[in-house]
Image 1 (spheres, rainbow, N blue to C red):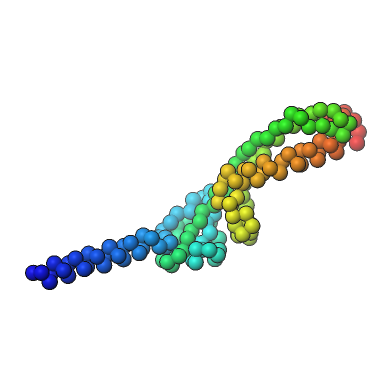
Image 2 (cartoon, rainbow, N blue to C red):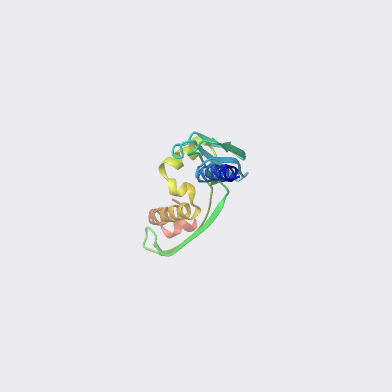
Length: 155
């Protein structure tokens, strides 16, 4: 009787150990990638082996990871009321930008390598876009006179 209880306890402990190993590993089973997303399959948890579209994916590798990147269109706005034209006229610009991550395998892999946080996080991507708009707006406003911007002068 005592041996049977010990045998049951050891089986239970083995099952818990195997379950804990599976739950703490990076493996994934039929993990979905939605239509507006692109998935990065990383069998070692670090390097991108495959860029995949929508569907369900499985990897039983211990360190495997499936990272999903949202490729849907996003919209942001920026304005600056204190810009100056070439002829020193004060103007204000408002910009509304619609942007999305490209879906091609090469583009996604390059973005993951160079701009990892922007690839993962929509807020970081928006911050990067908003950081570039002021420089472009300032360059454009100082290239033209107010009449050229309004289209009332040739040039």
